Length: 238
Image (cartoon, rainbow, N blue to C red; front, side, top):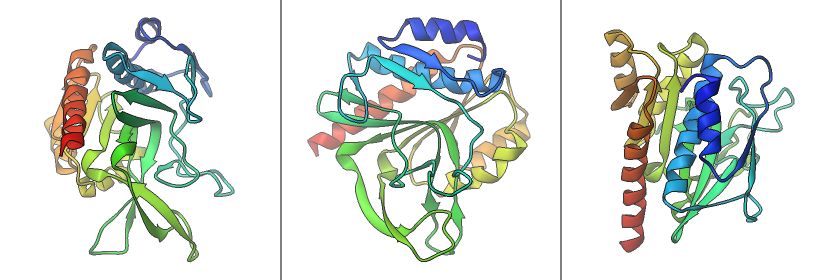
């Protein structure tokens, strides 16, 4: 999951021409981010789902650009926060009557009801089903003014798949507190090696109930996505 060989195998298994634009020499961490995404896409491929771009056209090629996780650009015009109006899915997946948004290496915007703090957790893969998204008005994330925008959310049906080589990088640890306040049960994390008990406690304290470790965790990823897809199909019947 953290090397070029895994990237090549996963790319060959997808009906998409995969191009990865590395901003610099790829690290094991960045290979893991990309391969986590490709593993999730391969599950939907096995389900005979269709891949389309954000304009609704069939998707035959996919360009992935893993970057250091930032909330916005220097001019604060383009946010990487799911639900923000300037944030767009990487692609869409259609399965039966469901349409899923796929985000890669993005942030989620959350707020607590008891304090005025904002939390910006980031994840390797985020899935949302458009069928159940709801809109609400809020202050623009990262804004120092009073500008109000419309955000979309479906926390109950949001799927979060995070990944890290072993222990959580220092630059990301402060974001993990946001996972604690996301009211969804589909929160998973992949580590390439076994991690200390203290790190497991840290992750569980921040909302992750299932932690997968090992070179190949494809079966575990598929199992999580199967639960997620079954749940979304059940919502259609309600």
